[in-house]
Length: 357
Image (cartoon, rainbow, N blue to C red; front, side, top):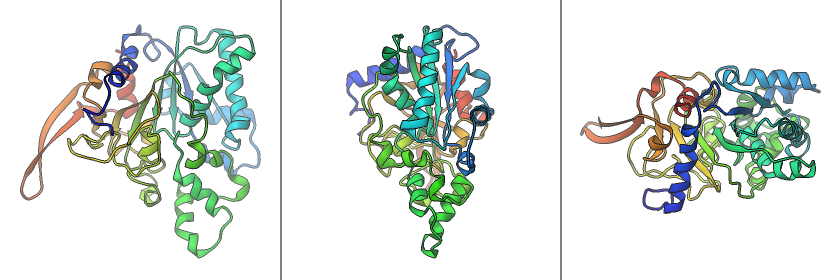
């Protein structure tokens, strides 16, 4: 269990280093002075199209990040949601990796920023990039860290539901189809599945699961999206698309309500369900109880953010507020640990500013 006493000394030390190295890098226009690569998530609109060309994929990739990260990035890995992970998406990743290696793009270190399914795509890239570059007689990429927003590396139950009801017209599946339609924006059919096949939790959790030495820093939300219609089909707390078991980096499917078992998403110090274990080098960082799936990389404001461990401010310079609040008719007091003034900016702004100091 992820509690203050249960972490090993070496695990805490790796946690601190993973966060701290970003702050110690020279400050430039990019994130901590290092080249930033963006890896987007599922693009449902692409699934609806009979075909999609490279220029459309590129334009969709640019639009995906327009709210914040586009202005801070140096390149992107754009991929088509109509493709399968181990096929067309892997080919797109391979082409980018080889190009970056040949140009020396990451010689001084790169930071990858992902959202949603981009977490899973990046896991494949990290798993294969040394093999790809060695086969081409090139140097592997120097990836310093990955910042995962609303990471779907553990899959999403909505993808499984989409496959289960694809082509169904039965009244028995109507509630599920309504949730899937809200998520995707269209009625799914068997020929429109694409990467949804790989996003099923049972498939995602068997994909490129070898340990990586690259720190994966996790930023998660628990807010409603799609008017809350998808939530009943996702275990535990979710952001409207991805459950916390995936977003936190948990190594198994669980019904949980926080990334750590001593602090809720809103910062309340309390006993709460959390992952029993994390994937190797996966570290939850920021949590927002009302931050929804798109809000993690968008311009959603007004959410007071919490953090996943007491030592985070030492690594990324979050300014922490401790407050005692009363609730209920008996005015019971509870302690809250939150990031100061976090409601005045988006989650992505908080992260960017924290690691750019």
